[in-house]
Image 1 (spheres, rainbow, N blue to C red):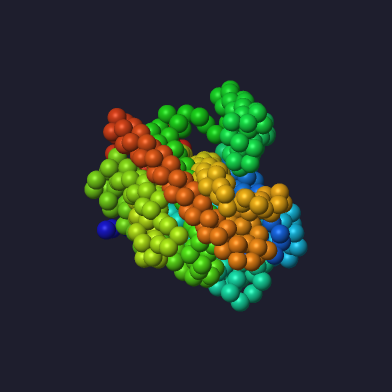
Image 2 (cartoon, rainbow, N blue to C red):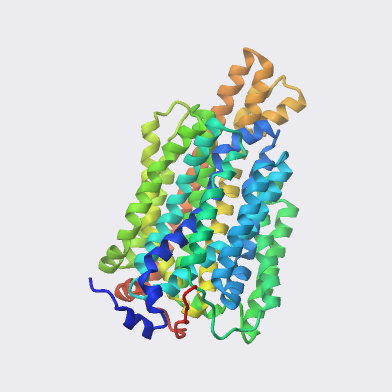
Length: 535
């Protein structure tokens, strides 16, 4: 394949010097992205240790995971807009410094509240880092190379989710639980140094006015929505508080949409949703991360608390998923070019559904090789789906608004992830409590509440019961597996429906595969912005 010359790229707004080092820049961006991903998933295998050492309840553990997602999601549009307006490199570097502060704070926390607050700080930082990586990518690569670069970015995004548990598992074998956060410190330092030297400055040359009202409404709407999703399993999906919170989120999001339609320079131009690339990919990406985060949250506990593997072994079992995604994702643009997104994206989603369906057959005594069947299905399915859907979102947005497009891409991931952890976790919890049944008879109210709080609680109660504790552990493990099976089946069914809807949408509104493969942008095209090298 022939590549554009530096001179040709200079004509499109890419400085020749920047073009020459574009792949080095991509390496820095992917390193920064890996920090955000590992910072999120590395915590999963440490949850049993945190529950024991900090006396954390299931709610505490869920908030350790979700405080990050909540703040990350509600700030993404605002952070992406600020990056477009004031400079994406500054947003990236500042976010990395703040992430470092949150990481160190989490590692020395002495209570569940301390970990939750530190994770919130990391969520603020991630909201600036992640959109900056993708928006900078689209501004240093010519459009013909963007799909390939985005494929690498997407592979790192998905693969990093499996690398985190391995690193944290190794650290938990040798150090205290806080070390799982410190794994990012040297990587952050490397990203800061290389980013300062290699990454160019870039921003929207039009310098649009800040949409303060839109920013506040987006924060309120997304924050309330994610909060409602997180709290629904605790209070009940049909409870008054849950319905009220969802209604409040709907009001805020509706007000945001109405404001964006009337303001002269909107934070999010709602016309993007007229483009099927943008709408279908946003919905599909949400469900991909619904499956991935929900599955990782549950399987980390399954491997350790049911099958009895260590944290390190648990991480290693998920490592092949990272290799598959990193190797397969860069090849997907070729398949898109040949077969079109209307075929490849639904196939990817079907593989994800197959992986979830296969998870439903896992049992208390399942051989470990059986678990690799759903893991590989999920890995191939996510690789097939994430790359084209990320490209579809970014190609539908003008290059000058790359931060907003990236924020939309990242928001779908965080909403899907939070929904996956909350919804699938809720299914497991409700099944678990119901299935324990007579195993908790004769226990004190305090013991019963602790046993019903989760597998870790059941183990703690069992230690107090002597021989009888063995029966409680057996019942709790089976109850958890029953819940995992139900959650996997529900997740698989949802993904099948989404795959069908996307297939129908892309068939009725076909997207030219060649145009998508070239990374060409949609009808709302703006001139590409100028970037300048760093001294």
